[in-house]
Amino acid sequence: MIFNNEELFFLNFEEDLTKKIIYAPLRSYLALAKNEVIDKIKSDEHSTMKEQFFKMLSEKSLLDMKVIIDNLHKVNPEISLAITDNCNLRCLYCHASAGEPHKLQTMSYKMIDAILNKYFEFISDTANLRVSFNGGGEPTYDFNKLVYAVNKVKELASKRNIKCKLSMATNGVYGNKVRQFIVKEFSDISLSFDGPAHIQNLHRPMANGKGSFSKVFETAKYFHDSKLNFAFRATVSEYSMNYLEEMIDFFAENFPYKSIGLENLNPFGRGKNCSEINPPDKIKFSERIVDLLKYTSDKPIKIINSATTDYDLIRPVFCTNVGIPSWTVDVNGVIYACHRDDAPDEFIFGKYDINTNSLQLDTTKIENIRKMVVLNYEECKDCFCKYHCAGDCPDRRLTDKLNCITTQNIGLSILNSKLSNNKKLNYGNTLSSTNNPPRFINE
Amino acid sequence: METLLVQQTTHQDSSMNETIAGTPSEILDFIEKEVDMGFFNQHSFEVKEGIVINDSCQRISKCGCNCNHCTWLS
Image (cartoon, rainbow over all chains, first blue to last red; front, top):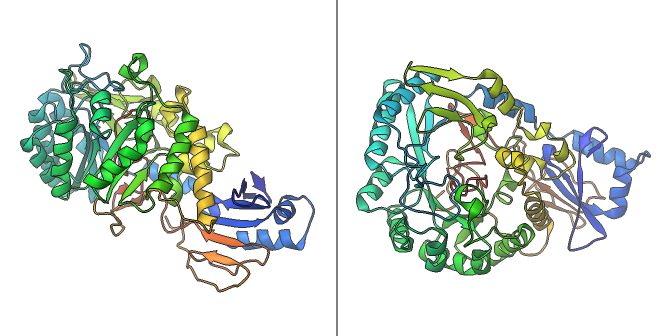
C-alpha cells in the first residue's frame, strides 16, 4: 500500500494485538509500534508523529527493483541441458513423466555439440559462467552423454578463458563411478530425497518397482563424506506431511549441517493422475512448516521452503530463468525459460534447428517473458510478500496453482519472529556462497 | 548496482526502544523496535563477475516452482 509515496505494509503482531508491524521492504525497514501510532501514520491528517516517521523513512536508501531487472537483462543467459527424458525411477509425482513410452529420448552427441557451440558463440565475454543439467529425466541416466557434455562445456569455456561452475538436480540412484564423477566435476548438487524408507520408497520407486531408499542413502553418505556442496530436496505429500518431524530427525541425524528444501507436491506430469499419493492441504502445510521452523531451532539442520527462505533478500522476479531469460534446452533443441518439462508455450522462446545448423530466438517471446515480474502483477500490488515470493513461480501463475496462503502464513510468522522476544524461527538462509562465508558446511 | 548503497549500521542503547541488528538513524520514540532487514547488503539477482548471485529461486535449495524436482544451492 502506498502512504505518502512510501510503500508500507501494516501487519498483525501476534504476541500483542495492541501493536502492529510496519514493513517497508524497499527501505529494508521493519518496526513495531502501538496501534494508535499506526493510525496516525496511516491517517490523512497531519501530525508531528506522521511527519517524523515519513522523514525518517525517506532518509533511508531506497532499493530500486527496476535496476535489478535491467541488470538481469544485460547478463548472459545461463544454459541448462536436458540431457535425457529417461530415468531409472518412476516417481509418482514426476513433472516430466520421465521414462514413460513417450519420454525415452536422449540428446544426441551432435545436438550436444551444436547447442553448446551456438551458446558459447552467443554469450559475451565473461569471467564466470554457470551451466546446469536439468529438465527432462535423470541427467546421469545416460552417463556417457553427461560426461561428454561436461567435457565439451569445459573445452569451450577454457577456449574463452571462462571459469565454469556446474550444477545438477539428481536422484542419487547410481554407484560409485557416477558419484566420483559428480564430486570431481560439480560445484552444486540438489539431491532429491524424500526422507525415511517408507516415504522415499512410496514416493520415488525404481523403474522395476523396488524401493530407491538404500541407493540414495548411500549416495547422500558419499556426498556428505566427500564434503560436496549439496542440499536435499524433499517433496511433501499428504502422506509424508504426517511424518515431517521424523523426516527432519532422519536428515539431522544422518547428515548434520545440511539444508533440506521442503516443498508441497504439485500435481503435474505423472502426478496429475496419481492415485497413490495426493498433494497436502496448503493451509495445513504452511502451519506444519512454521511448526518445523520451531522444531529445528536447536537441531543441526536448516529447513528451506520457497515461502520462508527469502526473508534475507528481496526480488522483483521469481527466477533467473524468466528474469534473463536463461536457456533450458530439451533433447530436441527447443529452448525454454523454464526447467519444467512440458512447460506451456509462453516459456518457449527459441529452437536450435539441427538440419540447418541455425539458432532461432523469438524476441517478442523474450520480451513477454521479461514482463513476468511482480511489478506487473496487479493482484500482488498490496501484498507484503510481493518482493519475497515475487509473485510465485510464473508457470504456477499460468496454471492457477498459486501458493499465496502458504507464502503469506509463513511470511507473517517470520516477520513476527524478527520482532519477537521469544525464540527465533530457524528458517534457512539463501545467501549465496559466492560472496559469503559458509554458515553450514554445505553452503 | 551503483544505486544500491550499502547502509552503515550503528547500534543504539535505549531503555525505551530496542534496535535490532542496527539501524542507520536514531529510533523514533514512538517506535518500539526496529530491524534493518539487510536488503542493502544482500539482495537478489546481484550481478557479480558476469554471473547472477543470490538468485534466490535456484541453486539455493529453495526453488519451489512447479517441477517437484530441482532444488539448487549455491
